[in-house]
Every structure is written in structure tokens, then in C-alpha cells.
Length: 192
Image (cartoon, rainbow, N blue to C red; front, top):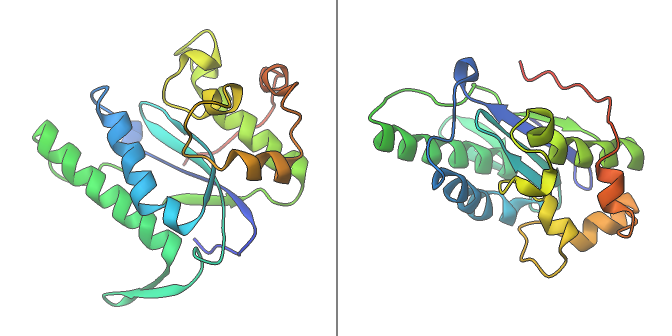
């Protein structure tokens, strides 16, 4: 994964063999705290969604995302190191909680650049929020507690996301946001 400052990325990973990565309701806020601790200092969080078997983030790389750091014999950008630390610490906690061993996530977290156009990045934002609805976990996106959708529909809500930046970058019309979010999106994602 190589990020370019100022670009927007759809970042995602899933459990090995599509297995669950969240086992109890408490695991979701624990993972979010990890995102806040390991990733928020290294990028702008634009959107997120935690699903039972995978997660999605929409981020914008900034000047803090891209410096190279050394980790043992490897060199990684700060953001990539943050992903590594997030998934490693979360896996350790889950392995202890569940009495299991081994890797929880697929080896490589993917980061797809969606900054080619405002439209593509806007589609990615809505796609991320639509995941629980499309998976049949809820009847309305706002019913899924583990995404940033409600952060955008309720401006008074505390948010991990940089909402003002998203509104500016994607030229979102917040009066239409809710209805636009429910428009059908033909956006397929290969999580393999």
C-alpha cells in the first residue's frame, strides 16, 4: 500500500476465510478506538463501516500519512504502520477474548484510490454506508450503529470523521444527503 498526499482511498480488509472479526457488541467500539488511536493521527477519516466479517474506511492521505518509517527490516509509510498496529493489537485482544491463536485478518489490507473524481469518491462514501443495508443486517442505514452514516445525518453527533472536509471535498449537499445515500449504487468490490 502506497499513499499519495491529498488522495482519497477506500481502505478495507476482512477476516481470514471470510470469518467473523467482531464477536461481541463490545468489539466494535474497541476497534473504533484503535482506529482513533492508530489511524486518525496519520490521515483524515472521511467515513467508516464495521461489518461482522470486514471493515471499510474512506480516508484522505495527508502530510502525516506518507513519511517512511523503519520497522525491523521493513520500511512502511506511517499510515501503513498504523494499519499494521491496529490489526495486530486488535487480533491479540480477540485471540485472548476468544481463546484462539493465529491471524484474524487477511494478510494485505487494500487501499484503492478513489480520488480520480468527486463522483467516484462520493460513490465510495455511499457504498460504505450502504453495506449493512445490502447485507440485510438492517432495513435502514441509520439503524446500523457501526458506521459513520448517522454522523452525517445528525450534525450534532460526535464523529471520528472530518465531516467538514468531506462536505467540501465531495461537494455534498447535506439537505439531499439522506436521499442521495439511498440511491442504488452499482459499485462492486472485490474483497479477495
